[in-house]
Structure formats: C-alpha cells, structure tokens
Amino acid sequence: MISSISERITQIRASLPPSVRLIAVTKQMPTEVIRAAYAAGIRDFGENRIQEAATKQGELQDLPGITWHFIGHLQTNKAKKALEQFDWIHSVDNLKLAQRLDQLAPQLGVNPQVCLQVKILPDPNKSGWTVPELLADLPALNQCKSLQIQGLMTIPPFGLNDAEIFYVFNSTQKLAKEITEQDWSHIKMEQLSMGMSGDYQLAVQAGATMVRLGTILFGKRT
Ligand SMILES: *Cc1c(COP(=O)(O)O)cnc(C)c1O
Image 1 (spheres, helix red, strand yellow):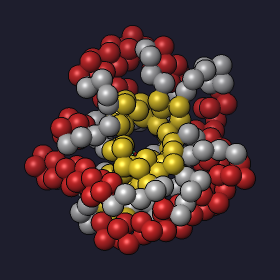
Image 2 (image 1 turned 45 degrees about the vertical axis):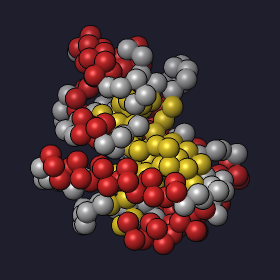
Image 3 (image 1 turned 90 degrees about the horizontal axis):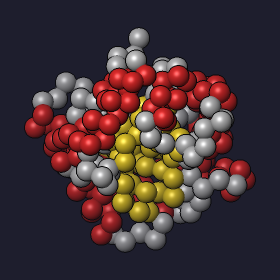
C-alpha cells in the first residue's frame, strides 16, 4: 500500500502543472498514510474535522514542514481551534465566521491564510456565499485585516456533467478576476482552491492553483 501511494503521488504530481499546489486530503485516513505521502514529498495536507486532525497532528509532530489546510465546514465555536491547528482555511463560508477568525487571529498570534467559499450554482447541501452575497460582503471582508484573504474555493454541486462542472470552475475564476479588478486593499484573489479527484482536470483547465485530492491518491475512504 505504501509504495502504491508513492507511485500515485508521483503520477498525479507529474500530470499537474508545476504551479498547481497539490493538497493531499487525508480525512478518515490513518497517520501511516500521511507518513507515506510525506515520504513521497507531500507537505500540504487537508483535513475536514478539527478533532480528527488534532489527534493526527499530535502523532505526527516528528514530521517538520507540514502545512495544514482545513477544508471542512467550520462552526464559529471551533474557530479558535481551527486557527491553532491549521495554516490555511479554505472553507470560510460566511461573514460572521470571517469576522470571528479576524478577531481571534491577533489574540492567538497567528496569520491565517484563507479562501472564501463560493457557490456558483444553488446547492442546498453546501455552505458558502452566493455570488451576489459575496460581492455585497466584500467591503466588510476588506476590514478583516488580520486575515490573509488569498482567493476563492468552490465545490460544484453533485451530479453535474463535465461542461457544467467546467462552467462552475470557470465562473469562479472570472469572479476572482472581477474582485481583483475592484482593487481591495486587504483581499487578494491569487488562489483558486478547486478540483477534487473526479474533476481536478477540469479545475486545472479553468485556472485552479490548488487542487484537493483524496481518493485518487489514497483509494476509497471506508
Ligand atoms: C473530501 C474532500 C476532498 C477530496 O475529495 P476526493 O474526491 O476524495 O478527492 C476535497 N475537498 C473537500 C472539501 C473535501 O471534503
């Protein structure tokens, strides 16, 4: 299993443009899997549950140089833990959460890198800003000066065909461009966190800078 993980990582890495950051999503995977990925050169790991990640991070303290990415829905009452445990939060999905993180970050002495999660198409199963909601919240987000707002994150609704998925990714890229042109002082739009195992090639075509891959690297989660 360990050697096949390293082979798959090498293969996927080689298929991605060098500028695209590969986030290995290790939710529900044991720490041996994280160690195997680390040995294969991965330094960016994505987790979606605070407690599960805390346990693994405790067991992996001997591995230097890991960047931890939080990719799950974050409840405001877990904002402090998320900031303590993670370098990046890809899934900031509402203004109240952004403001809470912004308030906590200086108290904790951390410098969180964040993406704003957007819903290009309606999706009752996902959180995130709709496009009009996000555009309306930009002035308030620009006041969140302790957050390093780096870009957008999106997950297409389940069940779309390739053309529709590409539309979602491409619209996210266009939205980032539109926001960049507004020239906010504290909002950067340099990162596009989009693409999972089933759709990352479309995401890369649409300009993804970070792909979040689990199944294709590690097999099915049980
Ligand atoms: C689980 C998850 C991934 C990885 O999904 P795979 O299909 O296993 O590659 C990526 N992003 C988010 C937000 C996830 O929850």
